[in-house]
Image (cartoon, rainbow, N blue to C red; front, side, top):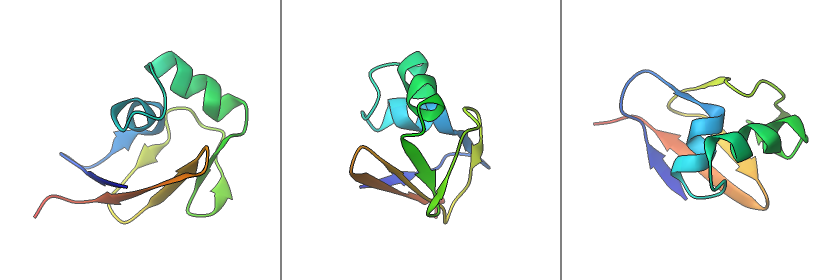
Length: 70
């Protein structure tokens, strides 16, 4: 799936909530803490990691491609 970024970055836990993988920001943080999330193929443990355009996030078998606004 694709996510279009509005601004410079989005925090990882908020991205998981906005695309519907997590039902809340708190659940998104828990998923990161549980080691369920990878950013650009590497495990990510920072709940509020800044995700920027061009990055790829994987969680629960789903891949999110982050794009910048045109």
